[in-house]
Length: 404
Image 1: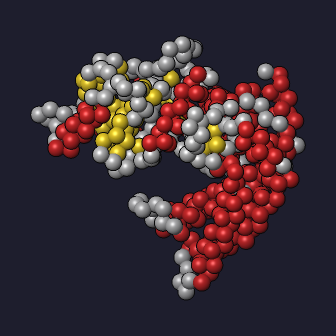
Image 2 (image 1 turned 180 degrees about the vertical axis):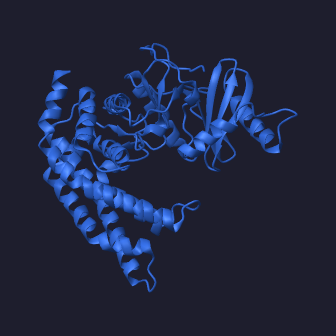
Image 3 (image 1 turned 90 degrees about the vertical axis):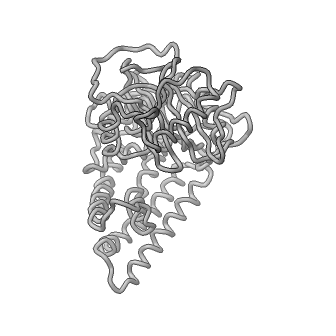
C-alpha cells in the first residue's frame, strides 16, 4: 500500500507486511475494534447509488470539509465514528488524506498544528497538518471542528520484539528532544500538567481514600471492593512515598527549569499511536493531548504499558532506558525522579477509577474489572524491587548514552 510522508524523510527499507498495513492515524479504539474495522471496510461504498443513508450523510459532510482544501475528492471511507470523534480516509487527486473530527477548541487545534510544525522541522516523523486554501488549521462546520492530515501507511510496532521496542523508545526520545524550547506564539498552552504535579497526586490520594471509605461502608461489598480494601492501605502509603521521593529528587527545580525551556509530553506514546513506515522509521500520531511536562511522564506510561502484561523485568527496563538515553540523555537526578514517579500506584489507581467512576460504560463486566484489578495489583507489587535495583543501574544507563 502507498504511504505519504514529508519530503526528505528517507531511510532504510523493510519487507512489506501487507496483512497489517493501514492508514496510521489511530481513531482512539481498541486493537480488536481496529482489526475488525480493517477486515470489514474493504470496498465498502462511501457514496453513490450503493451507499446507504448514513454513508451519503458522511460523504456529504466530508465533501463539505474537503471543499476548503485544494484537490478533487475521489472517494471517502469512514474509519471510526464515536460521536464527538470521527475519522475518515479520503482519496484525492493529491494523495490520501485523513480527516478527523476533533472535540476541542479552536485555540487547542491551533496549538497542536503549531507543535506539529515545530517538531517536524526538528526531525520528528509525524503527519503534517494540511492547511485550508485560506491558510487555516481546521474547518468549522456548525459546532464541530475538522482537521486534515497527510496519511502515512505503516504497521503497528510490537512491544514483544526487542528491536521494535527499542525503536519506540528512541522515537519517544526524539519526540521529547524535538519539542524542547517550544514557545506558543499566542502564549496559550492547552495543558500545563507539570506545574500542578503535587496537587494532582494529592487529589488522586484523596480519591483512593474516598473509594476505600465507600467500599468499607457497603453492607454488601462486591469482590472488587473486598480485593481493593485488602490492598488499599499499602498503595496509599506507596503514593505518599512517591511524593516524598519526588521532592528528594528535586523535581520542583526541574519543573522550574521547564518554565523557561518548555518541552512537551504526548501522553499516549504507545503502539496504537505509532507506526513503522515502509522506510523502517517510526511515525507518531494523535497529538490531541499534548501537555507541557517533564519527559518522565511519557516514560512512566510506556513502562507501565509494557510491563503490565506480567511482572516487572529489570533488564527490559534498563534496555528501554538505554535506547532512550541514546537520543535524549537524562541526568542521574532525573532518573531518580523517574523512579519516584513510577513509585506512585498509577495502575491500581487507574483501574479503581474505571470501576468506581464507571468510566467503562459497555463491555466491562464485574468479572472483567476484578480480573484487571488483580493484574494491576500483581504488576504494582512486582515493580518495587525492580525500581530499587534500577537505582543501582542508573550510571550504566548514562554511560551507555555517552558511548553513542
